[in-house]
Every structure is written in C-alpha cells, then in structure tokens.
Length: 170
Image (cartoon, rainbow, N blue to C red; front, top):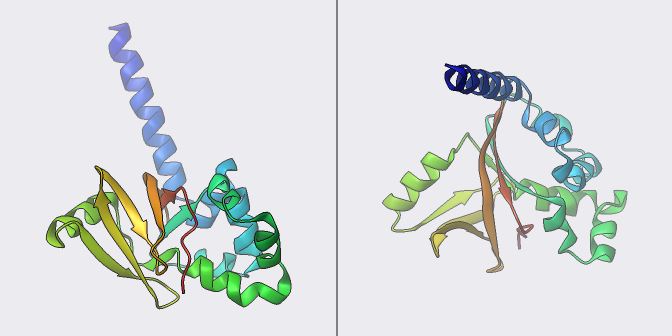
C-alpha cells in the first residue's frame, strides 16, 4: 500500500509540474532553466523575447549554455552587441520552426522521409532533421550537426527541443 501511495504521489506531482510548465510560454520555460541563460541573454539582445511569448505555436531548438560555449567567446560577445542585433536575430530565428512539432511528429516525418526531413525556419532558411547512429540530429545550412538531446519540453505556446550545438544559417 505504501508503494502505491508513493507511486500515486510521484505521478500526481509530475502531472502538476508538467501542467504548471505548460502554462508558461517557451520563453518563460527557458528563463526558468539555468541551462539556457546564454540563450535568454541572446533573445533579449536580439529583441525576440516578446515575439516568442506570442501565441505561436513555435518549435524551438534551444541551444544550452554548453552549446553556446562552443562558439568562440569573442564572436559570441560581438553577436550580443547592439550593432549586431540583426545578425543575432537571424541566427536565433534559424532555431525556430512555426508550429508545434513534438518528438512523435519528428519520428513520423523521418519515417516518411526515409530518415531525413527538411523544416523551414522562421528566418526562411531550411534546417534538416535526420536520424543517424540511433539519434536525432539537426544539420544546418553549412553542413554542421547538432544532436537533439532532450525533447518535448512543453510551453503554453509551443515546444522546446534541447540541442548541444548552435546551428548556423548561411
């Protein structure tokens, strides 16, 4: 009986937590996660916070702090400057797909597309999703890869998939 109560308590807690996060926008979810501090800083610098707090729905491939750390620090700091706001916005909107695409949707599209599918990003360029070595990857316009490490972090206006490398548009 104690095990059943414990299981029900855990399930209820997880359900409440999942429901609470679904009430937050994808930006609010990112702000509340310490792994996305660089992303949040970049969104603010690019003046994209209000846009991504809109109704959506959006699918965001969100780079972690470690993903941003792979970029040369001088280059990253330069991108965060006001004079480079347009270039930064171009990079960040390359990480956003209009519509809500869950992991299940991605897997179904990959099966239909023989292991590969192209998605049009908010900046108008294409981002390729593919299955390789039993994992799901993004391939950017320059031929670089980023692994999707966590899927289906739900927000009220879309979904976040966590990636381990910043993807770059042309």
